[in-house]
Length: 197
Image 1 (cartoon, rainbow, N blue to C red):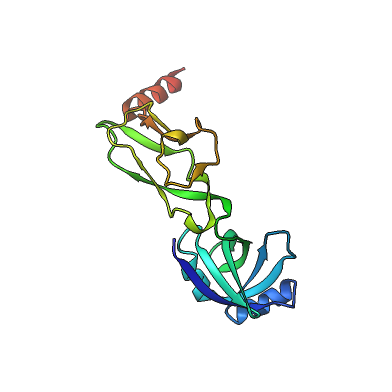
Image 2 (image 1 turned 90 degrees about the vertical axis):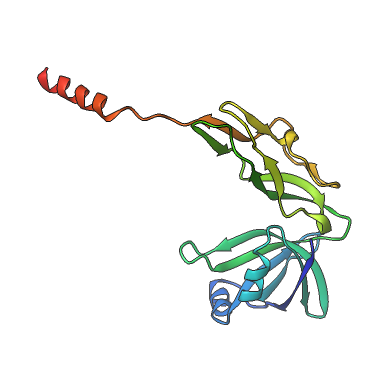
């Protein structure tokens, strides 16, 4: 995964009022944690950060106060309705360091013919990977799977250098039979019988 370079400003004002002022200035308040250091409070230009965060687990090089820090997003808070960025927590990382992240699951292929539904038990796969080599996603084929079939975590091919951070036998996807609704005629007959009693 390529690094995204962003420029940040050091924040010295804290609290709700300071955060609101930053957002009015089109800046997103953020905190950098990690490596036993004191948390670093920064603000990043909203649009640039929003574009960087379109890639899950984006590797970001933050330049601020004459320093350069390699980080990945750990917690992204968005406004509930309009979904604009409210606050971001970053984890400081180093090349070669292993981190635990959740990687999106990309499904390909068609289920077996019939009334089958694919249920996502996990929406993302927890893995451990080198901070500078986090995969953007993992791909799972569901080609020809029938009702009752499951895809377990151990069935998913991971890129080299990545390892599962969940039990091997954890169910990731399962195929279930579609629930058939009772025909409308039967329901109407049942209502008629109740009326006569």
